[in-house]
Length: 210
Image (cartoon, rainbow, N blue to C red; front, side, top):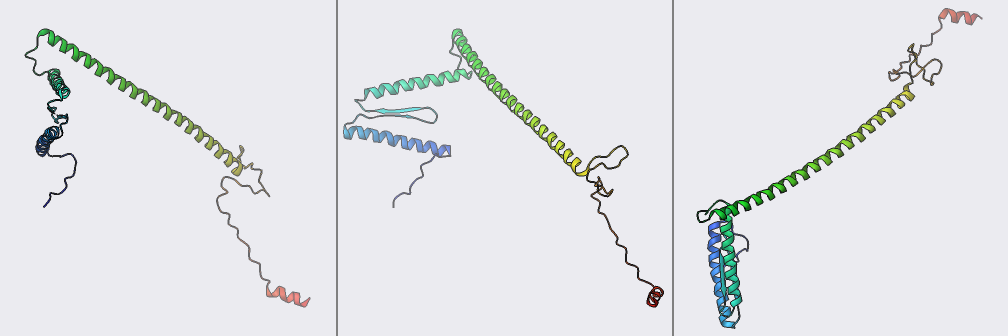
């Protein structure tokens, strides 16, 4: 009964990931050796683990790959050692001159970091200033529009309701028969029609005699 397919993705569990790396690394190196022997091929394999450890294989005649692997191994070792020293570790074997050089390197690195930080801060300040100017300009434009709308409303109000003189009488040119449209024109006008008076019987009798 065959095994099920394994989904090819990163293994989250660190222990399972390390076990899988060891098994597949050994299998890959074994296959490389078999390929070199069976097919008389020159095979070179270089593997870096997640921790930076180097594994390699090169066939007997692949001298170039052997040299390349050795150089990469030495370079990786130097980088790891330098990194530990930058972190203040493994300094016991360094002379005063070595420590001075390391201090100079750290100061140069720190200066570069500070310059980069200052540049980022300056860029952010300039961007905020630009946005502030845009907002201020928008506020000015909105203020102008509000004043324009207020002026139009006043002109429209004057056309509809007219103006009042010093005595309080309405000077609207729309007066008709001394009836004007003033500010209180929105109040409904109630008109009451008088009922026609019926003639009395006595008056009717007199008219009949006539």
